[in-house]
Image (cartoon, rainbow, N blue to C red):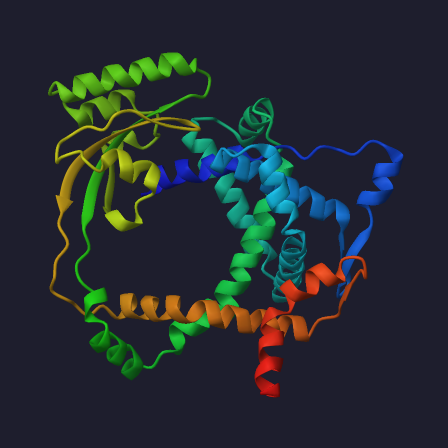
Length: 352
């Protein structure tokens, strides 16, 4: 669901808060402490504190728990957080070695362009200005995406793709025969949408318009015509609001829940997301089937999903064993048990 998934992605994107700057001289000295050296790179306390703050902000928003409680819970996992940052640094360094920078930057630029189009803005500069108004630093977002995409590309190319293509035809067929129940026709839903953006408008006015459109659609108005005339999606004239057919189990809860009791040809209540309002129409529903069918791609994906966690752990273990990692003695007791978990398991097996 291209349009809706983009909207969901933007929720996480806009939820990020700007990292505060540290102005006091004594505090500056503390946050610049080197926590660990990873090959030629260093991880500073300022980076650790920044990422912990971002984690706190995110969990507070998601869980609605008191900030003090979340702060305490995250602080208790400081060693795990540092271990994760070290692993991330290894993947970023590996990405540079593999030369993924061009692909990474292309994906980052495409994300910004997609959001620009969804917001009906005419230029990236206009998008950056809107982000600034909302308290979002585009450079921070770009850096966050750079790390995320680099990490994902390395794991996809070095681990996931090798696992996926590593299965022999015999292994694929054998797995299918032993797990036929997994490969039945899924329950699906076909959806159309009207999207009303908040950009440049009073939110209350947008919400009121959404209520009116829902009332018109439920009264029998042509939904496709309403989408063409009112939706803020740039391709609404071509798509007539249709966004496609999807596996219900894979539908994001933000949309799956409001659609749960909506019948075919029915209209959802207005669904508020960060960038605007979604009005969804159920075009069709297809019940799940009991008869199994062989699809080599789906079987390989299922096999890969099962094998991937173990394969990724092994890959990271090898990356660490080939790297120079020197952890500050102050943080070593809390980091090493989290960082070298797999290595300790191997050693434990050897001593038995």
